[in-house]
Amino acid sequence: MFLTKQAIAGFFTLASLAQPLMAQPSPIEWPTKTVTVLVATAAGGNTDLMARMGADYLTKKTGKSFVVENRPSAGGVITTTQVGAAAPDGYTLMFAPAAVALLSPLVQKLPVDPEQVLVPITNVGTGAQVIAIKRSLPVKTLNEFFEYARANPGKLNFVIAGANNLSHIVPIMLFKKANVNVVMVPTRGETDAITSVTSGFSDFYFGNASILLQYADHASMRLLAVGTGERIPAAPDLPTVAETVPGFQMSSWNGFFAPKGTPEEILQVIRSAIAEMDAEPAMKEKLFKLGIIPGGQSREEVKATFDRDRAAFAAGVAAAGIEKQ
Image (cartoon, rainbow, N blue to C red; front, side, top):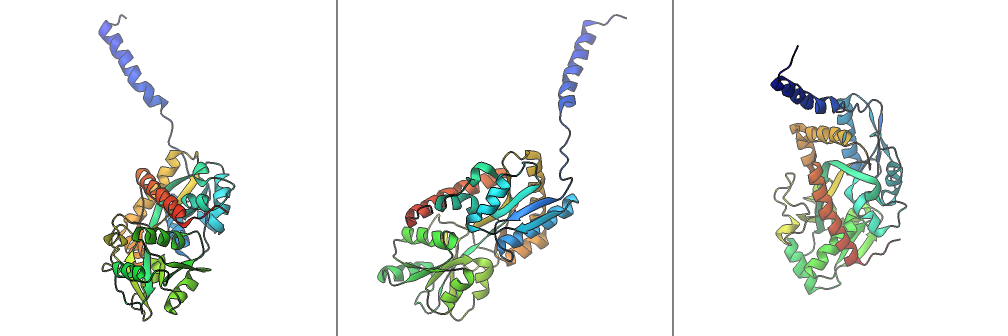
């Protein structure tokens, strides 16, 4: 049998089209066993809550267990080191605030650089941060607080919950932009910081909305502003800091990280599942009530958030004159 030139050409055309199809790898099979999620903070806080929400949904979605283990440490060094050294196969993940990767390296001497060994995947949510002041101060807005502070330099104070975190760095950044002199008062944690304000000892605190919104009508505390880019559904009448200080934005991204080198297909499974979870009306309502902005960010959105926060943290650390310890 003889083939015409047209038939021969058609045969090679079909063969060339089929070749890339045959060369395509089969879809990755993951997970096939239990996934461990190491949380950089203690149980009971916002980060832990979001980690468990995400792990529960991934368990339901994939049919394999996502087990949460809390490994709190200064700057998240334990989780960063352990997950960064784990095999990049998707079976050991970290859940942490972005500050663990972006702020900790600026203020601590770490055994590893988090951004060199970890890749952020997506967030379950972004925790809003709120400015609270002592209600007895003769001010009702953030701008009035700044004016009062300028008129009384060095006479007002701000309390921090621990050190080298958002409650410490963000007020310093804000006061520098507003050109005010406010004295720092350290405490061990958020409970002590709030008590310091409600007792009348401290004048200013920048803390978690999920906790501070409960004090909206407190006799000794007034909420002034929220640090997110837009007003939050849980407190729509609470202005943003940016309404007084244009462009100012700081909140707490909380999400999953994987060892660098983890296949993109695995990362995308996690991104898609968390985006699906955060799109559910019941989940949105639950997060909003806690003062948390639902997440499920894409790879590009995560990069943009980290680029913005990295620059902001660097500026804050420089303004505070903090040296690595």
